[in-house]
Length: 172
Image (cartoon, rainbow, N blue to C red; front, side, top):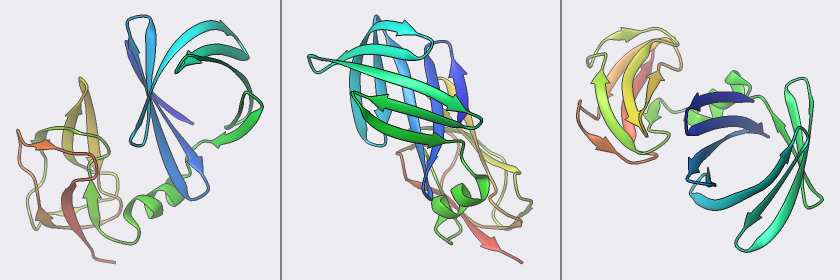
């Protein structure tokens, strides 16, 4: 699993088959807001131990048991087990782009910088755009060597989750 931290927020990415899921945990007063895809869960943490968390959601009390083995985390919530793995960058890239060369916003935010121009040659991992979301800067990077075919956003623009930002052309 990959973690990004902010004083009141934590972002966890994990692999589930070929799909990468992003879970955002944000402290709101004494509660925690958990965002998974388009679902929002308001959770009250009741008790925490190293391998167990007791929490309340929608008026029901739940217990989650956790264990880790290398890059895999096992979580059982009320007996329902889940196996979470650290994302495989090769599989994640394929899933995110589905063979296309369109880069999209992973969450709503504001474009603060566009670091390339249309027609620019770019290398895999090169930062292309900086998106600010919830007081975090997220760098959108090139998934492979290629060329910027079309810029679809400009600095200051507000974008939605899933909105296309850049079209890339693969020059392999």
